[in-house]
Image 1 (cartoon, rainbow, N blue to C red):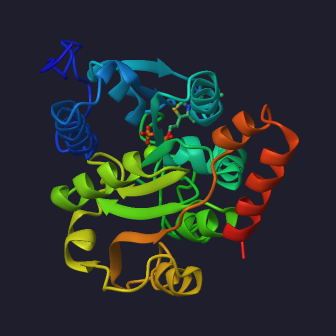
Image 2: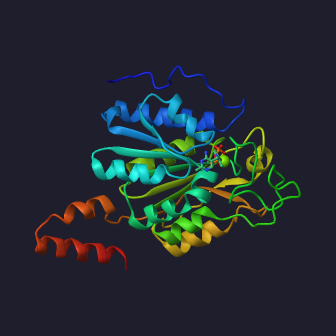
Image 3: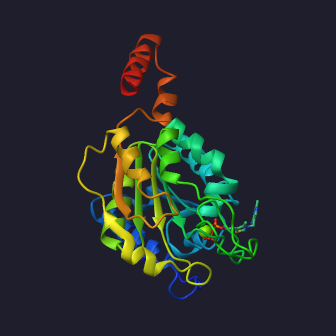
Length: 283
Ligand SMILES: Cc1ncc(C[n+]2csc(CCOP(=O)(O)OP(=O)(O)O)c2C)c(N)n1
Ligand SMILES: [Mg+2]
């Protein structure tokens, strides 16, 4: 099917002003562009977690799987391993993937499985009405922390770098052109691609003014240099008032888990060759 209507007729229940609209629109634009360039949209699968973000599976007219909370990544990994021809995109929430499903995120990055993870990081549990998540700012007052959280937020990009992710980026929903480039780059990347998308929660944590005044583009540097990437990633720790860099922080080529699994069925000499190639990429 070409030129398909990408938005479904399902009733949209996101709050007015929610950042999810931008992510949906941007993903739709990227998919339409890919289709124009020859990708069959039937070869794309969207897997979502549970939360406000996850409703994107209802609203986008592509093959999709509504997983359970925190388990979008294992479902996506299974889909990719069953059919390597598919482009598998996970839309997950910060509560979903940095709390309940964190171990899956780390291991998917470690394995460098060829899937794309887009985190709708509103830094709060939106659907369950405002509890704190691992990226909520220190002191955030929500339903479960009426006196303010006492925990310092996690820096998910640093965690992904340490875990072995081969494409690490941060976007912001009010910078749509950049977000589009990052999403397209992530889908085209062979290996585990990760984008943390800062989005506001219009009802429980509206950081629009802060993001609008603090976000900056990343300067030019060698994106395959892990030490430089780490330095840039650490400049904003999800809590300080420091400038918030947006863009692609890190990218490197490495064999993917799905490729290697296929190599297991190759003759021994061929396998050894592949193993050497793999080790060379880890120096
Ligand atoms: C196994 C399981 N644990 C907890 C829940 C309750 N629950 C549903 S959505 C949600 C939080 C979602 O937050 P987030 O992933 O940040 O998504 P958002 O709503 O902010 O988009 C929770 C805790 C659940 N549905 N299933
Ligand atoms: Mg959330």
